[in-house]
Image (cartoon, rainbow, N blue to C red; front, side, top):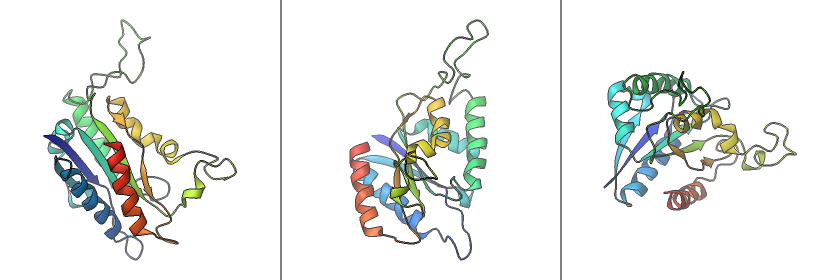
Length: 196
């Protein structure tokens, strides 16, 4: 049996973000994975977590999916805290990585090649107000042609540094101004079918 970890990084903001869409997307991901014979563990960061249990959740998972809103072009601050705590513990326990790949004897080795989580996959599933047209188009002044994956390289680098393969991100775009949730759900299901 395959194992998956779904991390819900939603953070509540009164009048702005209740979390309903992120919770719905996380539930859809869970159902889709279970339909593909995954045993699924879920963490809702906002409800609290045990750091060592999260290290074990990562080590047991074949697939890790972060479901998150995008606030000010990044994840909610509670996710950064989660990463700092869980990845530091995973490093200290030598479960996630064994250094950065280089050694004092051979500092020429590739930086970022010390990961111990090979064979695992990581995927972002995002909800945000940015329209899809803002990405991959050099005429757009904000992202200047960057894709969603380019914009979130700082997030995915944590996993890649630990040896995890990074899958293409999924996004629900324009969720405040022009939501199309029915289509987003269909696209998410298709994305998961192609990615895993």
